[in-house]
Image 1 (cartoon, rainbow, N blue to C red):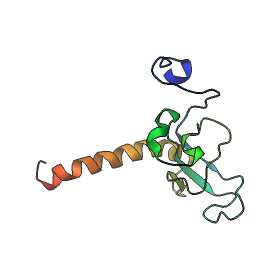
Image 2 (spheres, one colour):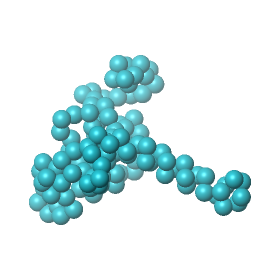
Image 3 (cartoon, one colour):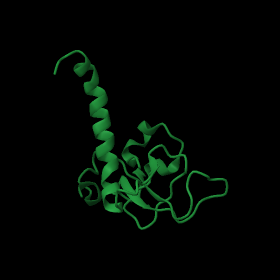
Length: 120
């Protein structure tokens, strides 16, 4: 892992302590009062935006840039990239989906105008 090793220290300002990681999957262990979208025991997965991109996130949720390579992570229930894990997907598979899915979605959105105009 290049970032934790410090390979980009001259190019990216990171405040420490820093927990790396973007994709995650796990089980909800606690919810605040008033949260109805998730309950203790719910299986979830999602994506946290890297701290280096915090300024691009446009979100006031601190968890959007929380590292996910940890035993526990905190996410607000209204975090945009948080979802219930499909029962057909195990935890490892679900943790591998967010970045790949966001990349595929962006690629499809970019390619759609070309496909609509008969370029392929």
